[in-house]
Length: 610
Image (cartoon, rainbow, N blue to C red; front, side, top):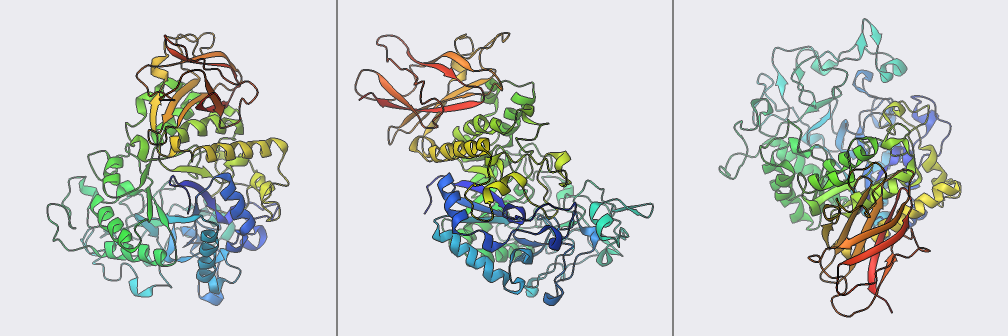
């Protein structure tokens, strides 16, 4: 099986392997095409594994609300008032026990084809992660796979909150009025394309339910998650974090288990039985910690090594605990939590006004350093290659940014599909291009990634030379991150030791060092492996005559022996200009790098010179 440190490739099957081109704005499935389970063939899986990937996060495989009908399967299209895009949002799930029929060659066998895909992935020694979305479902949710577990049928709709209700109801508020029509005219893309919108949803024509992002009104706004409805875990979120918990707690473990807990346990068990190895849990900080402790324990009783990663944000005022919710989620059993603080700060180095030194103020402050899932891109964040973000410096920014974000801790690594070839989200037919993200809601393709897919050969045959070089650089980085120093080692920041040292990458006009340079050491005491890491974040200028002092209190790279140390760059950035470490005695240890190009990184493995 894969290396101990998960390296996750976020793969949106709808677009990842779709080779139909050109796309029509908001085009139908028949017009724009879609990726298929079968498209993840051995060539694709082999290439991803060689890149350094260990886990595939199959984003959006659950059957979502959609404008595409399957009448032969008795799966009608959804009310267009409930759709963001023709294809539908992967986070508005209509059946949590089913997969999207779009991805199957034979939609009636969609679960069988998904099971075959899982088997194929496992044959290539990769693991499978899917989304677990506990906070909300599509307003139209109705399971055809498990109709016996239909939610809300036993609810008491006369009460806003009841411990055994699956949903939060709004007595006296209705009908639900959706923000899709204004003065009789459609205002959303789905309504304009599909027609038939009236701003209403028949099942909530008398009384509305709470919208997925905690909106307790029958009139959610256009920016709300109006296509979804919030689930109830026995905790009335409107009464604040200290509201009574009508579910088992440490203080009162004998309280009845809410029905939603049992339903969600059945969801996890269903996918585990199909071979899924782990779950990326959406908005995990909105769900009671007691549920996570209970549910993860039960999942691990079924499969001890099942992987759980939490999308969670400590600064969200809607989090369910006064304590650091990221730490609380780890204590509840999660393997890793999102670390958005380091992402946001590093992006602000390029967009202003932050310095690389500022990273030391946030590392470990929110998410624990070595239990954090880090990324330079994901589906919620902007594309690095988009010209309006990351300083507008292009896809090459991703190499030093990723080397830094992914190289400082031992937690899981995340690579967003297309990042490795510089996908910019600039397709004029992509309605989300203005937001610098690849569309989640429509059928389409990723034009630059399509060059690597190359008619499902997955050999990069159509990549431009600079794209091929970029992908190879990501491959060297991801494979280096499986080395013991990164998978198991400790982190020692060096910037605090060099702020007043003008030889530490100080550019003209900077009053101190550490604006565009960040350096650290990773050391694994078990294997003895020792790596010096340096990134030059400056978009245009090289670092020259760079001196990096190794403080005396840091671990020796070579515990015994004397003489010079050979430094080998695991990333291949400076193979022709080898750094020097004369290993002076007495005096401070110092590494000298003659030149580190703009937007580059080095991982210097220390070894005794032969």
